[in-house]
Length: 461
Ligand code: SF4
Ligand code: SF4
Image (cartoon, rainbow, N blue to C red; front, side, top):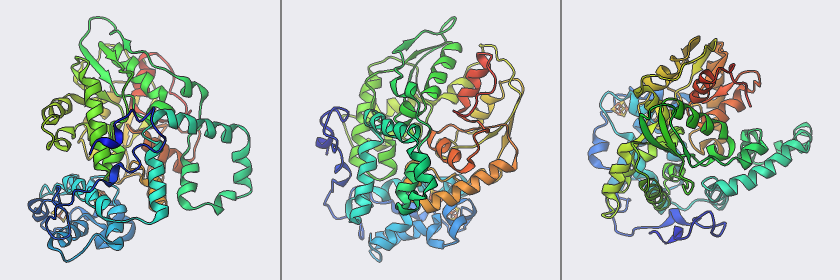
């Protein structure tokens, strides 16, 4: 199962890993599932069909269709288990449209673990459902690009030329984008302004703690984060150091596998998890710090993901126990670095993979409130996903756009001076739909960093 990624993906063939999601255990399982972790009957039966989750489900909110709700999707899993439905196109669509936002897990009074069910369902789909050629090619291109920072940098150079040469203006003025398929239009619309300094940035491998060290931590730099949001990584390292953490930034780290896992590409995700564990195990640290909600939620699950692998199961559990969102680490530490005031009304958006999946809601708010002058404002319909959801806004652009516009309207309704959220995907999605260069969109750590350094409210970059 590991042969696809035997070589370093950064140095390998550009199509390395393209087929990694397609390994297919062949043992027959219940109904129309195979035997490799089909959705668990006991977890399915935990659902008492009460419907409390329905109003918080973004796809149910958009379309009002039972089969696009958590309850309906659980029912469909049960039907496949019973053999009365198969993994055909109409059924798979109901799972492709699920954002994996886990708002239903937060809402469910019966404790239904939809996260675990979906985590079992998606690999079954990838193993047994034959996607159309266009869909397959687009997905494979995404997974040949996004988890590879070097390839992303090359693509970003193309984006830089597109933005700086005037080509973007010509394309938009002549409405050429209207002729592109929706997925390619979404790709163009989500491209952030590319900065040369981000493309050449190279973080140090170690930053000493300011004052007496209180923690020794290692930081995940992420894939999209490392290429398009180097300022967030720099702010993370500076803030941790200012608060007494010795910070290590392992240079040989690769993609953590979150995007692959969320898309059901299990073998690829597991191999990336193993590599990430091996990289960080080499450093004796108190915590592995993450500033990307989607990565953090997957890394906290490595123990479960690698439970079948005798060589890695215990190592994965030990690794996951150390994973912390950066705001969790800061909230655990009594603030030591003096904060300078920033007078701002900050709308805080809970990234789904931080709020729903990791249940980290208090820490980011508490960390923002350590800044004198900052007023933290919650959003209406805060539980609804912004439509980013990993690569969902590329794969399902229409639904993502509707959700993005709804989130933008909710943000505007609270009249903020800035918006803070702890996930690059949410930042890109909200940038697109707010379309307001005067409204700063920031990771919370950028605000804390600015406050410690005595700077004004950062502007949108
Ligand atoms: S998932 Fe939970 S909230 Fe939703 S219908 Fe089932 S039991 Fe009710
Ligand atoms: S994960 Fe999100 S989109 Fe999917 S069923 Fe649950 S609430 Fe709905």
